[in-house]
Length: 253
Image (cartoon, rainbow, N blue to C red; front, side, top):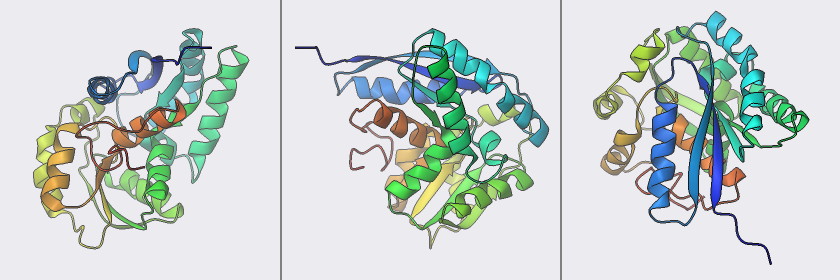
C-alpha cells in the first residue's frame, strides 16, 4: 500500500522585477501547513521585465518556456505563472494557449507538471464561484487595465467598475502598502458587484487586506494571488483551504 504524498514542490514562473509572488503564495501555503498535513517547497525561475508595458510583457512571456524547462528540471509537482497582465494583453483566452504550451514543454523535458496561470486562475475562479458581476482594482496604466477588464468580460463576467492605479514601474507596484487597499476600495463602486477583485495583479501586495476588507464589506474578496493559490492546490488534488485568505480559499469551493 503506497503512502499518501504530503510533500510538494511548487514551481513559480516569475517576472524578474516581481517581489510579491514569492512572498504571498508561500505565505498562504505555509499558513495552511499549520492546519493541514501537507508541506510545500518553492522553486522559482525568472523572466526579464522591469516596466509594465505591452512590449516588455510580450517579450517576457516569450521567455516563459525557458522557465518551464528549468522548473521541470527540478521535477516540480505544479507550476504557477504570474503575470496576469502579460497573458491578458495577448488576446482573449490566451491563458489556455499558455498553459497548454508550458505543460507540453514540461512533458517533453521528462517531468510533466500542470501549469496554472494567474490570468486563467482569476477567470476560472469567478466561474467556480458562479459570479456574473465584479469590481476590481489594478495597479496598471489605464489602457492595460482596460484590456484586463475586456479579458474578464469576454469570459462572461461583467466588470461593473474598476480602478487603475497607473503605476508603470513594477518595483513600485511591489512596494505598495497592502492596507492602502482598504482605503482605495472606498472609491470603487462595488454596489452591484458580487465579488471584489482587490488586486488584479500578483505583484501588488494585498494579502494582509483581504480578510479585513471582506469582513468589513460583507462581500467576497479575491485577488490574483489567491486565485492562483486555489488552483495550485486544486491541481495537486488537495483541500482548497487557507485560513484568513478570503472566500475562495475558505474550503467551500
